[in-house]
Image (tube, rainbow, N blue to C red; front, top):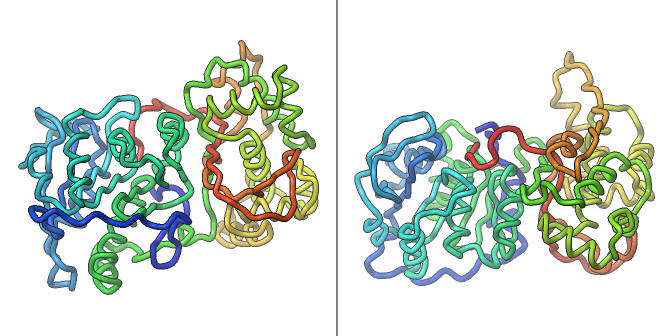
Length: 429
């Protein structure tokens, strides 16, 4: 639960909806009630995430002006349900109760490396086919993806697990920069507190702004967050485990060490002794990301660190991050982080306590590689990139910083970079 505020920029259908239009919602089956919310719990899940929809939809707050939902807490599998803290839970309902729900919430999943129970997946699919709204909070998105409900859709999850979700389910358009994504009848949120944001969004959608604001007051949380209410986004450099021993890892290490130099994807392909086409295919198959977009993202991240930790001008930052011009830096920075470099620096310094010393800029160190194991390489990267849905020129041309006119389009691009601390398959928020 280390990433309490989730990851990304608030998404709301009334103001900041995803670029993809929400899909038409199926007509709700007559046996399903719109006010009934089923929360599907599994053993091994963290109790905080599990409790979010229980608190939002399971407590009668009509005295505060919040319409009442009927909550059905359902066990997704047999046996007592144990949380990550060792507590045992006994759910009053089983999978059969999902047949009455107009909304089904999967608040978490115990392990991103395990497949959810087939019976639970079938119950979720049936609910969706009968018009129920399906919600996955944090790692609950993996359950929705396993059920096939995220195919061809935009979705988000905790930034630490976004690359794995993108790699395992390549037809899902993963965007870890979003607090939550509303695609009509299927909704997903990022980590921990972003689950609260999504639940508030559901109440707002169902009953209006006043009801959501009343609930937010009772929960003592903001009724609506925008850009984390800080003006900044966070990116993640996490990496799918599958790249671990691949020779491309050495090329990645070299690129991270030489971001201050101007080189393009052709140079990386040459270092890998591959044609550009082969390199692009291998890189995308291993990471879920196009190498051009990954390289741009790493340069933006380096610029972000320099803006936070140095007094270099924006022009100097551009040069030290390998951008061909300050114009290129400003364009890519705004597309990925939602603000100009100067605005980002001003907002960062305004939030930092006056007596907080400047953080030293980390010096990349890459230990000797053994056939390119990423576990060593990625100590270089720190934590930051995981974007996907970045807007890039439709015809980017050659080179990592290609600029030019032309319409922009959505392109999936998952981050590549630092090794993650601790077990990769345990939900953290």
